[in-house]
Amino acid sequence: MVFFERDIAIDLGTSSIIVYVSGKGITLREPTVVAVDKHSGKLLKVGEDAQKMLGRTPANIVSIYPITSGVISDYDMTVRMLKELIQRITSFSLFKPRIIICVPGSISGVEERATIDAGIEAGARKVYLLESSVAAATGAGADISKPDGHMVIDIGGGTTEVGVVSLNGVVESESIKTAGDAFDEAIVKYIRRKHNLLIGLRTAEEIKIRIGSAYPIQEVSTEEVKGRCLMTGLPRSVTVDTNDIAEALQEPLTTILDSVQMVLEKTPPELVADISQNGIIMCGGGSLIPGLDRLVYAKTGIKINTVDDPITCTAYGAGKLLNNLGEMGDGMINLARKRQMK
Image (cartoon, rainbow, N blue to C red; front, top):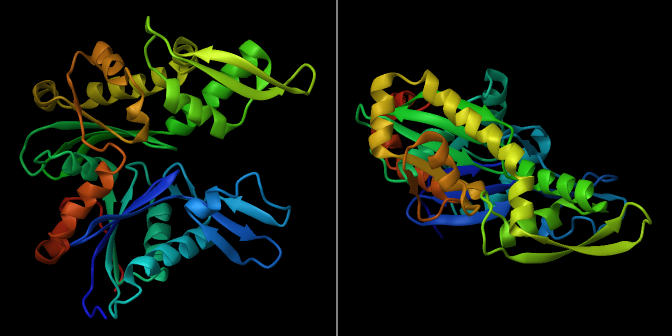
């Protein structure tokens, strides 16, 4: 039996939750979804098991996404989901862990309090909130303790975080609700408009992963897409290629590029010069779209730094900061807007 505590860092995303445990690293990565019996209120499945049930359940079982745009939208389900996941990690521990939870820079005071309360109720001893941009920059290996500017573009499932980090804090940031989910919706709309074919969001996501691109290319890949014909109501299939997906993604990608430019315009000139030299850090699942780095470079003229694992970069960065909790104490507020309950 384990008699010592293990601190935990959680990247609580719209589409997935990633957990880092001190001394172990990334130990858990699950979709942010729960399956519930709406008659009894019983929690049936959490994470990947719940995701497999999507669209395949009787009427009394519903799937709930408790996180919307990076913040809690269903408090009770978030608590139950966190409690289940934390118990998987600390099932043999006698001590409640301290937890860092990554949050978007645009989080409000009410949303902060809800996140803290959810963490405490789920079994945490103390909860620290850390802005995603700080965690992502740390995870990418940037030394954010120096007076040197680093820019982060974190494209998640529900939100895109664009932030400039320096001296352990966020100087400028922008959080928009255009990210991976918006890419899927754009593909659904495009195929519906061009081919009169209705497909689901999961199918759109699979197309994005297999043949997606941010740039039109010469050597295209093709994919057969099956769905329901809007003219006849019967099953039908069409063939789409990489350039079709690139065209479909132009609107959400333009929104993200506009946010990048907006943040650069608000950033002090000295830090812009640093960013020009250091480059832009891109992470998050949405950054895996081929050609996106070229698109951002074409817009900004600033080199793009790719990370080894864009999906777990934020959780890994928050995990690295777990080692400083004891010695930093209340100084943690310089790293992020920290709140804790005793």
